[in-house]
Picture 1 (tube, helix red, strand yellow):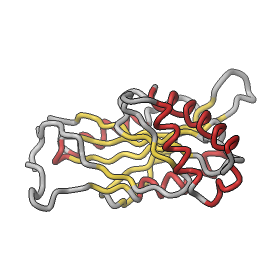
Picture 2 (cartoon, rainbow, N blue to C red):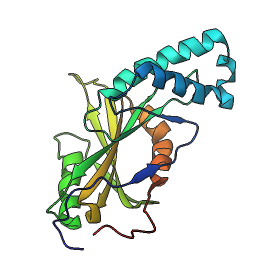
Picture 3 (tube, helix red, strand yellow):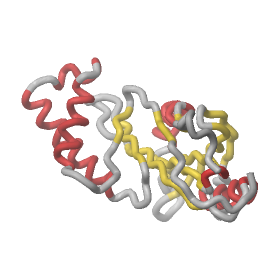
Length: 212
């Protein structure tokens, strides 16, 4: 397929397990209605059984309303998944899926440009780590980029984790990103992010074949 395909949003579908709940990033509709649906989904899971009381449901709905506000501030996201493993853990953050227009670039150019965008060379002792992955949606690159915040020798170090797919046939790429304030949290939840990325796949219409 030649370069220059017009941008079309890839029909990416993400299967997620009981650590996650899908966020509403559309900015449309009532956030409280979404929060009530999300709370009901969580309460159907075994690890949330202790919250199946009127008070517990109310608190969980309020928590999800706050999460909805955060999700809707994510600019350019087509999908988002909130990491909320248990009542004790609460909300750990959101994995945001953002489409990128690569029309006019071939796959090789897109990989190079977007990897440089996701993991720019920064001064210091934390070079980015790039790892190839195979997912249901095809080839993916995982990037781990540590960063230090604040000033002084005892600055806390966090980590940005990103996943990149290039879909030249659609003139598009997809970036999935999530950040952690500590390396311990990043290491702990990296397998969950890997699983989420691995279970992303393209929903093609068998009657229409490949995009042209």
